[in-house]
Amino acid sequence: MASKKAEKPFLTDIKTLRDRARKHIEDGAVTPGYQADREVVVNLLNAALATELVCILRYKRHYFMASGIYADAVAQEFLQHANEEQMHADQIAARIVQLKGEPDFNPDGLATRSHAEYVEGENLIDMIKEDLIAERIAIDSYSEMIRYIGDKDPTTRRMLEGILAMEEEHADDLAGMLTELDV
Image 1 (spheres, rainbow, N blue to C red):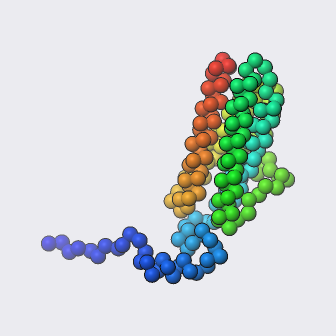
Image 2 (cartoon, rainbow, N blue to C red):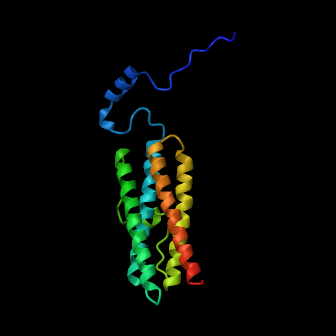
Image 3 (cartoon, rainbow, N blue to C red):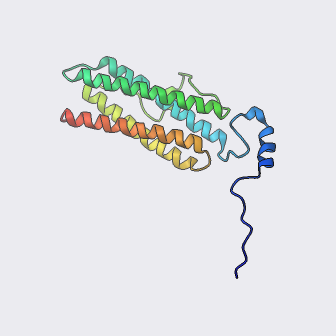
């Protein structure tokens, strides 16, 4: 008969959890169990924040500058995307603060911190294409961040996964517009 190994409990014993929770309470949500490099994650999130802010500005410009026979429907999509990008920026900024970092809203260098570019576009088709390019960049950026973070910071990973899903939806919307406009 094989001897049974003493199984290690899944959860740290409650006394240890309680003792750890009392230490460094000023760190808020960042407990000793946090496994990611907090500084690296905050830097990644600030780059994501810059990307979202640039996308908001580009979508807002496109919303106001849209013209032509299809402009109304496309402009409404631009506005919806701008509003959703604002939600992303707010989520990211809040998470940076939870991680004891500071969200970088400084307009100086915003374009250089952003993964996506701010390209105005000459006409409605150009605007849609530039927004689609930016969404594709965001999809790759968020995918890489998610892989990097892995299981070391589940809260940030889940937030990024939700944002990624919406960026994929935006890209699909924009690609659909190009198809409908027969480009």
